[in-house]
Amino acid sequence: MKRLVMALFAGAATLSAGLTSAHADAARGREVYTKVGCYQCHGFEGQGANTGPRIGPEPIDVEALKSFLRNASATAMPPYSEKLVSDGDVADIHAFLASVKKPPAAKDIPLLNNR
Image (cartoon, rainbow, N blue to C red; front, side, top):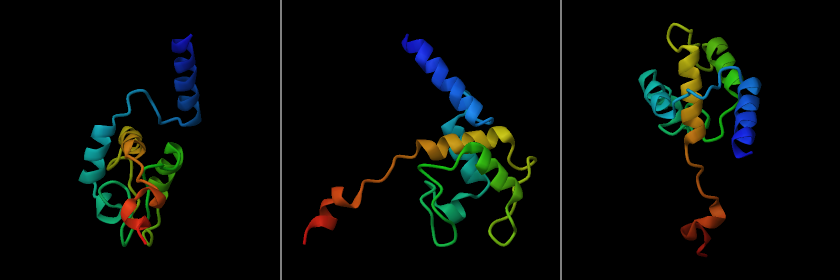
């Protein structure tokens, strides 16, 4: 039964995001993310920086990410063609961003709560 539920979940995830596959590799995604320079604007963990918004740990849908990368305007960020970042690379980058550990809530940080 557990295998059936997991298979259904995996199938639903694949249908909802055409690029998502069981083969998406978060470690490779981190490498591609760094290689193509995403970290320069979005930080090493996708946390955002002065020039780019937070894009992890809860990234937009993988198809939306692909569409944005392919069609970004040069004023916001340069577009990334499939020659530079393949669809597989996009899936791996998405897997990396989704794997980033969520930061603790401010209420859970003692230093921020000592008044």
